[in-house]
Amino acid sequence: MANSISPSPSQPDELARDSGPVKLNAAELVRVAIPLGEPFRISSGEVRLKEALLLRIGEGDFSGWGESSAMSGSFYSAETPDTCQRELLEVLLPAVLGRQFSSLLDLDAYLAGLTSNRFARVAIETAAWDLVARRRNLSLHEVLGLPSLPKIPSGLAVGLYDTEAELLAAIHRYWSDDYQRLKIKIKRGQDVNLVKAVRKEFGDLPLFVDANADYRREDFPVFEQLDDFGLMMFEQPLAKSDLEGAALLQRRVCTPVCLDEGVETVADARRAIDLGGCKIVNIKVQRVGGFLAALRIMEVCARHQIALWIGTMPELGVGSAQALALTGHAGVAFPTDVEPSRRWYVDDVVEPEIALRPGGLFLPDGPGLGFEVDDAKLRRYAVNLLSFKADRGTSPS
Ligand code: MG
Image 1 (tube, protein in one colour):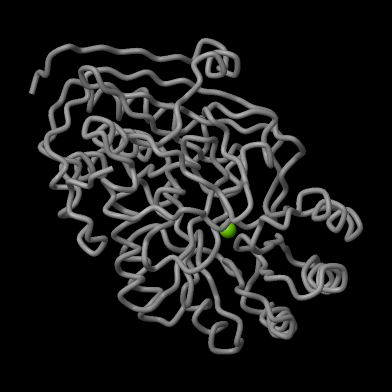
Image 2: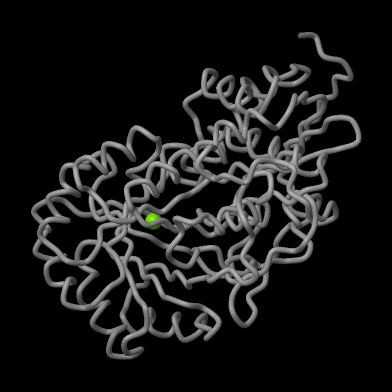
């Protein structure tokens, strides 16, 4: 497809400003719940059901899809599907519907002024980018100023289990040679033993650990032990606010520290970089509140030689496709956490499903996300009476 928007990833604000006017005349919000193939457990909790809010916004003949995908139980973030649903229905959608924005830059600033709930506003912001892409008959990555990768390297992520044997069995169950690295979750008391067991069973495959902020500064000796295992990174070892602690840790270990929860804003990224608190940042569109925020953070990181990779909550297919659209950024240096739909869920809402093939994941060549949302599946997995529809044909502003 021809790219009629400036392709420079170093100018995210200009890209967003060049989108042209955006008027959101119609919206449909559907809360869905899809069972996980098995419970997903990290250091702070467990989920058995994937809940997400899928948002379709319309402008004339075109529509775009967004997803709000905070985890249930607030064990990754303070936001949950309930808080995001409330914010979208009571604050954000009533405010944006019928309003004309001069550009996606204007929309982002307006949303940021309405709420600090990034997991809620991401649904509208990303849907608007998809809408603009479809209106221009461009792929999402093209309107984001990014190339697409013919094959997108993907990594397997495996949660916590009660025993090492169960963890190893799960890795055997899910591993495919089409993955390009393995990530395991750790928590205090389940760390060095897990890495040792995985190394013994699987040898020197590219491996790293994600602590989801479970450790404290007094636990540094654990990471000094883990430093001997040739891991690719330590993902979010400490509390998200403890960037100084991350910097202290980074000075004590050779393994790169990666921040996930700790980088929510450009200001966080700048502070982490100034402190020397990370060498790698995991970018999640959901956590940072949208594409523009993600691109801004990616630009800052790339300028300071902080390596990037694209993470996932995980989201359903809409959010996953959004993540994949960012993987062509020049700063991305590691495989994405996005995995095939069937890895996590008994089903997904997008058509075609996200699939892993030799060499990685593929983005369909089509406008916008490249994937379409299957209406029948949307209805099948919709939670009781939580559909929201609004339609304002004309703009009051
Ligand atoms: Mg993480």
